[in-house]
Amino acid sequence: LPAPASGAEKTALTNDWVENQNRLYALLSGEEAPLLTIPEAENRDGSLTFQVSGSQYLYYKGSSSWLRVNGEAIAVPSADRPVNTVYPAMLNNNVLYLGYFENETVTVEGEYLRALDLSLLDARRLLALGDKLEAENTGVSVTAGNASLTVTIADAAQEQCLFLPVAALDGWSCTGNGKKAAAGKAADILMAIPLEAGDNVVELRFTAPGLLPGWLAAGGTALVLLASVLLRRRLGWL
Image (cartoon, rainbow, N blue to C red; front, side, top):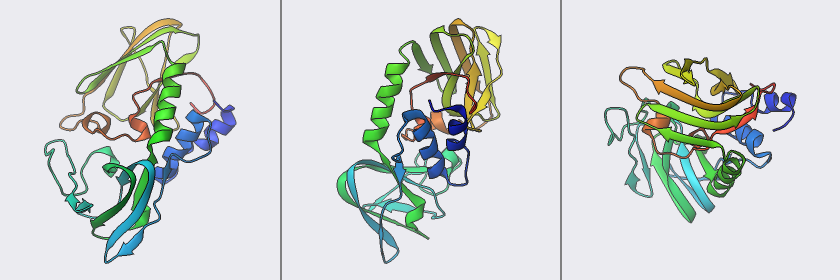
């Protein structure tokens, strides 16, 4: 990881969710190239058309009440209506996954569309980061339930913590080796849980009534949904 001051600067939150993801990606990968980019789109009678180069995941966050991609209506799943098509929905901070595209032309239709509301996530960079994190964390295993997560960590060092790419929302409870644990925050929003030296079993459960957390309810591939779990020493950005 970068030096603490550099890491804190790179992960300072902004009002731009794309910029926040890119800052976190830079911190974890050590690369300056962005993970997410805004497509160069042409406006054609209220629709946006653009060329996708390479392998990209497409996301939307805006104010349109409906969306079609290449002529097909986009589902906007909610906690109680998985086939809902009315946007926005109360999941994933209204960031909507529109599909995976590879070296092709894409047209997005909807109300009040702007290119700034779309973002392309580079699949190659995401997979490379996942491989890197998996190689660095061979002593970590993860089991996920409907509203729970169990993480087993082998041979943690003194003053290490478990960093999870999961929003530190009210409603999460946490135990470490059977004892109640306080989850801190990394990058002002993600979960960082202190570990004991040696082996650890960390269990988390979400108990907010009526609404599953977005990372469990959706199958998108944004950086915060990475299955990889990071072990890092405490630095200035935690």
